[in-house]
Amino acid sequence: MRTVDRVCYAIAAALVLAGLFHLVVFFVDGGPWEGPVSWRKPTTFGVSFGLTLASVVWVTSYLSIAPRLRAVLLGVFAADCVVEVAGITIQAWRGVPSHFNMETAASRGIAMTLAFGGAVLVVVLVAFALNAFRTRRTPRRACAWRCARASPRSSSAWRRAPP
Image: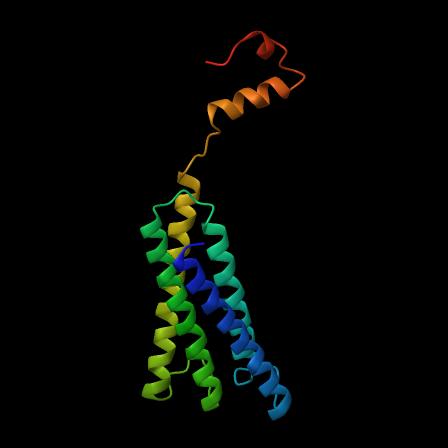
C-alpha cells in the first residue's frame, strides 16, 4: 500500500470518527435531528465523507493512472473532504445553518468555501472517471491463450500453438 493510500485511509477513519462523535453529542445535547441547524449534519457529513474517501482510494487503486497524478488527485480530494466536514461542523457548533447562509461575513465565507469545495470534488471525481473510461485493459497474450484453450467452444485453439 502506498503512503498516499495510508494517509487517505487515516483521514477517512478520522472523518468517520468525527461523525460518530457528533452522533454522541446529539444524544447528550439533544435538540432536533431535522432542520438546517442540527447535529445530523456533522454526523452525516463526517460518516459520508469518510466512507466516500475510503471508497475512492480503494477504487482508484485499480485504475491505470500515473502514481504521481493519482497521489495529487487523492490529496486534493482528501483535503477537500476535510474542509467540507470542517465547514459543516463549525456551523453546527455555531448554531447557524451551514448552506446558503449569508447572514454574517463568517457564514458567507464558510458557505462560499463549501460551494467551491463541492466544485473541486466534482472536478476530481470527473478526472478519475475520465481516466477509468480512457484506459483499456487487455489481458496478456499468455492469459488469452489459456482462456481460449479452456473454452469448450474454441476447439480450434487446441490445434494452434501459442506464439
